[in-house]
Structures are given as C-alpha cells and as structure tokens.
Length: 300
Image 1 (tube, rainbow, N blue to C red):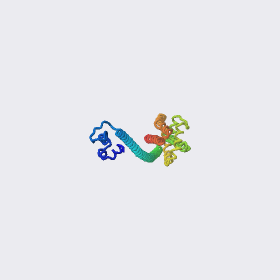
Image 2 (cartoon, rainbow, N blue to C red):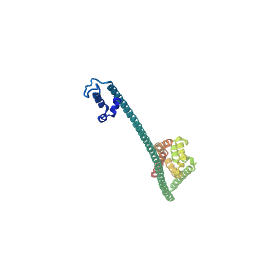
Image 3 (cartoon, one colour):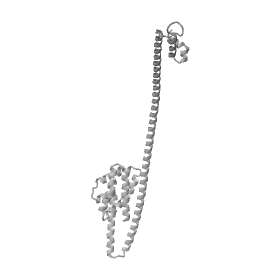
Image 4 (tube, helix red, strand yellow):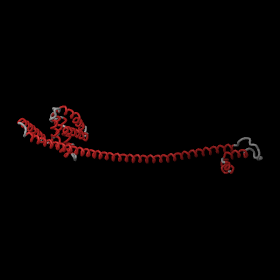
C-alpha cells in the first residue's frame, strides 16, 4: 500500500486537515532501520519520495479540478447573467416601444384637438364678421333712409324757391339718376366679376380687369370661400355692401391716394397670403379692408 493511500485512511490525516502533516510524521518514524522506534532517519527512502511525488500530483490534480469547477461555475453564472440581461433589455425595449406608441397617440389627439379648435375659432370669427357686416349694412340703410327723407324735404322746399333753385334741383335729380344707373350697372355685372372693392381700387389705379390681384382674389373666392359652409351667405352680404363702398370710393376727391393706401395695406398682403396658402389669414385681411371702407363711408 502506498503512502498516499495510507494517508487517506489514517485518522491523523483526517483530523489534521491534510495529507502533508501525516506524510511528514510517517517519514520521520517509519524510515531507516527496522530497529528501535526511536532510531534517527538518515535520509528519505524511495518509498517516501514516491509518496511525496504522488501527494504533489494529487494536490495538482485537485487544484486543476477545483479550477475547472470554478471556471465551469463562472461560465454558468455568466450565461445566467447574460440571460437576465437579455430579458431586461427585451423588457426595456418593449417598455420604450409602448411609451413611444403612447406619445404618438397623444400627439395625434392633440393635433386633432388643435385642428378642431382652429376650425371653431374660424367659424366664430366668420360669424362675428357677418354680424358686424349686417350691423354696418343696417346703419348704411338707416343713413340712406335719412338722406332720402332729407332729399324729399328739400324738394318740398324747392317748390317755393326761384327758377334757379328749380334748375339746381333738376341738376341734382339728374346726378342722382346717373348715380343710380351706375349702381345698377355694377349690380348687373356677372357674378364671376363681383370683386367690387378690389375692382374699384384697381380701376382707380389704372390696372386692367385681368391683373394679378383681381385674378388671384376671384380664384380665392370661387375655389375656397364659396366652398365653405358659410361662403355663399358671406358673399351675398358682400354683394350688398360692396357696391355702396364702390360709390364712396369713386366720389372721393383724393381717391387715387386713398386707393394706393388700400392696395398697400390690404390688397397686396391679402394676395400674398392667398398665394402662400394662408386662406384664413387672407379672409381676415379682406374683412379688415371691407370694414375700413364701410367705416370711412359712414363717417364721410
């Protein structure tokens, strides 16, 4: 039996916690002569050298096995960690996708709400502008009635005047007839050319009927305004107030300068807005033009 085998079975080796202690004791007390137990060992025997070699080999094998086991355990732990990390990444990716989808849905809802709010705002602006125009038309009609009453009163007074007064009254009557005929001529124009205010401004400024401003605004009216739910009603109101504004412009002594300002402040910005596709802005600018001319006519 070899020293290593004896060492593995001996209780001293087990109690001492290893083979090395046992082998040293064994070499000290079992080597040398077969005499008394206390004889001094003069040197390691072949058996002790072999035992030591086997012991070292056993220790190296045990260390190698332990290193192998540790490496295997680390590989298994790395694989488990990789699986956990992959699962965490997958969960994180799914959370990111869900969050992105929620953000996109919220953005779509916001855009829909903003579009609805803009449409409601535009409808409210159109309704307000229509009411303003109706009030202005009513004021102009009231003023016209007052003027008619004044004219009738003056005509009654003219019966008591001299022949010169009668002639003057006849001249005024002829002027009124001419004004009425001009008004009727404007009102009987084809609907496609009923851009009253813009047409009057362009005529005063010497621009042709097919100039860029008139072509652009007529197209804007026919292809956008009249296709709105409120378009025809708005156009009908404009056809009532428009000719009255035209009469006011044509009888201004400084109409050329007045029309230059109107074109620069309103017509040109309106045409630019239409060409850029800002139809709501263009409609608002044209409302401002009509409102200004109506106020000027009422205050004249």
